[in-house]
Amino acid sequence: MKAIPALAIALLAAAGSVQAANEQSDMPQHPLAMQATAGHEGIGVLKAVNEQAGKVQISHEPLADLQWPAMTMWFALRAPLPQDIRVGDAIRFELRPGENKQWVIVRIVRK
Image 1 (cartoon, one colour):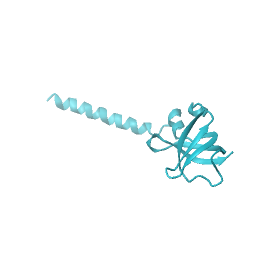
Image 2 (cartoon, rainbow, N blue to C red):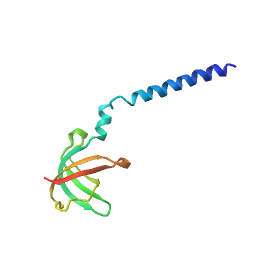
Image 3 (cartoon, helix red, strand yellow):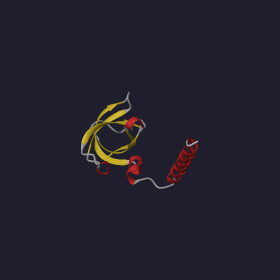
Image 4 (cartoon, one colour):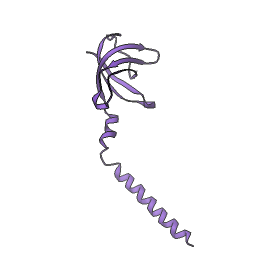
């Protein structure tokens, strides 16, 4: 008999948690969560292209909004590399978080 009141209390508590979670989904996202979905612009030099893998290597300046120092990294490309961009070119690019914790270049142009 004692189990029934305890079960009822647990069910009420769970229902309250679900309602609170639904109400929170309408609230604005935390700034750091929003940062993860926003595009980040950078400046760099195109160092290498792997067309088969759909990736480029960029030596970029610091990205202050991501707190990244200047470094050379491989990035996935959302679309094929524009034909007017060659290895060694100074570029501007926009990247966003993609699947599997990879950063994806969503826009790339010559500087």
